[in-house]
Every structure is written in C-alpha cells, then in structure tokens.
Length: 445
Image (cartoon, rainbow, N blue to C red; front, side, top):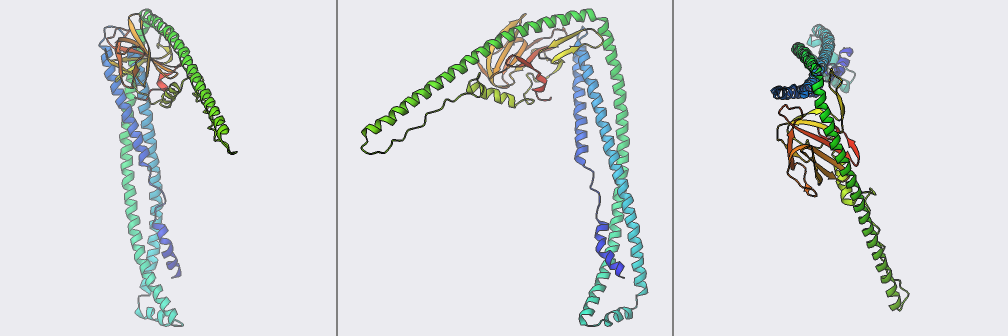
C-alpha cells in the first residue's frame, strides 16, 4: 500500500516528456537555403541561353557553367544536411518511443497491482475497520485522507497510461512522416547528382572547345589586359592627383582652424586685461578658455571627407551592385581559363549585364573624373579617401565635380569585348592607391 502511495508522487515525472522536440527552424533554414540556390541556378540557366545565342564562343559560357556546378554541389550538400537532420529526428523519436513503451509497461504493472489490491480489499468492512481502528480522531481523519489520495492515484494512473499511449502513437506517426520525408529527400538527392554529372560533361565540352580556340581567345584576353592596363594607368594618375588635392584641402582647413583659434585666444587675452584696469576691487574677470583647433581624425582628410569615408567603410558587404541585373565574368585578382594557358589579373571585377543597362553609383560622393579609354568612358566617384570606378561605359550622364547620390544613374554599360551581344562593366574599388576586392564590399545578390 505504501509503495502505491509513493508511486502517486512520482507519477508526474513518469508522464512528463524527457527529450525536447527537434528544432524545426534549422530544417526550415536548410530548405530556404536550398530553394534560394535553386533560384540562382535558374537565373544562370537563363543567362546561359542569352550567351549561347551569340555567334562566337564566349568565356561567359564557361564562367556561368562553373558557377552553376558550384551551386549544384551546394544544393547537394544542403540536401545531405537535411538528410542528417531527418536521421537525427528518427533517432530521437525511436529513443523516445522506446522510453515511453518502458514507462507504459511499468505503469500497467503497477496499475494491475493496485487493481488486485483493491479487489482483495473490496469489502466495506475492511475500509471501515481501517478507519475505526485509528488511535484517535485525528488519526481517523488522516486515514480517510489517505484513502481519498489512493483513489485519486488510481484514477491518475489510468489517465497517465492513456496519455503515454497517445504519446507513443504520436511519436510513431512522426517516425512514419520522417521516413517518408527521408525517402523523398533521397530521391531529390539522386536527381541533383544526375544533373551535376550532366553539367560536368557540359563543362568538359566547353573546355574542349576553348582549348581548340586557344589562340583566338588568347587575342581576346590580350586586348582585355591592354584595356585594363590603360584603365589602371589613368585611374592611378587621377587618384594620386585627388589624394594630393585632398591633402591640400585638409592642410588649408587645419590652417583656417588654427588661425581662428589664435584670433580667439588674442580676443580672450584683451578681454581679460581691460576689466582689471577699470575695476576698483580685487575681483578677477572671468577669462574664456581658448578654442582648441578642431582637426579631422585622419591627418590627410578634411572633416567632411573623413565622415564620408567612415560611412562608406561602415557599409562594407552591404553596398548595392552598380547594375540591377548581371553576373561576374571576371573576379578580382587572378583569373584562369580552364583547359588553356590563358590567364589574366584584374584590379576589379567584370560584370556582364544587359546591353545599355543603367550603371548606378553605389554610394554618395563626388565625381572626381570622367575619362576615356579606347572609345569607352570611365567615371571615378570619390567617397572621402575611397574611390569607385565605373569603366567600359558607352555613355555618361554626370560631369566632373558634381555630387551624386547612391543609386543615381551615372551612365550606360558599353558592349562586351567578347562580341556576345551583352553589355559589360568594369568596376573597381580603391582606398587611396590600394585596390580592394569589390565582391567583399557589395551585398550578396
């Protein structure tokens, strides 16, 4: 009997859940990532169709195909993570079902014992005898409370058994859904693997074509190298001149502030002397503290330039792209054409876009220069001691020394150097004379 009462107090722990439910947010994030990557692949396929309309083999075709391969592998990796998450759920649910079944067996055994005891003690005389055999009235009251607690315990036992069975059924239902989901995900994994194999073959075919056209493509890349070298030469000269002018502006501002501070100190000194001569008492006139020279934190920048540069730097990885639609055909640094000895180095990125697409400033600033390279325009916008360059423009809509806002159209993209009918933009970011990787400054598309 005492054992049954003790079980009453621990029954709550038996019926309570032990393991937390699997995190659904992680699985939702994986699915979101997979769908987003698949959308990127669809965009690349659309761009590939446009590129393949051209009469000549284009390097963009290989670049897009390689990017698609990388994205396809990313989809497969995400699916593998999803399968791992499902396997983890299956393991947890199996373990929980095993625990609940053990609990259910224990509950049924104890409940059976309590039923047997109740059957043996079913006589009203036994209960009355139990109460009236109490030593005193208070003891009788405690025995009545005990019997009521015991009856409540039996009712709770039955309810706990029912709830535990319901939990087991729910877990078995989750297990069935998880196994079905795993089967569907494995099928998707197999389909993506087939697509990956097919796309690798397509890439190999493109590389083989490029290898057969290496001489012709080499001439295209040689012209591109020459163009980029001319851009870099002009940009370097313009930026160095801009840096010198910025230093002169900063020096002039410091001199102006210093002169103002000296004039203020002189005025304060005169104001402090005059009251002493006119006063008949020993009171000392209050003297204003001299105004300190307010200088920019950066010795080579004016305060306005320093503030603009600080804001530009704070937006790293969040800056908008200079065109609304497009994709990279050359990355910052070394670029190698697979299957050939063709390679080139870029101080910025090359963006393939729609013919005549609007090119926009990525941040507020001042147009430092509008220049021309082999019939194509370039625009440099200064953001403090940061500079953005927009090259290979077919036309320009801004002039030197004008202020521009982020998103403002500054020109139109010129034609591609590969004769594929696409527009093309050469985009660079500099901090003074150092070239930076634009991909780490622009937000992910």
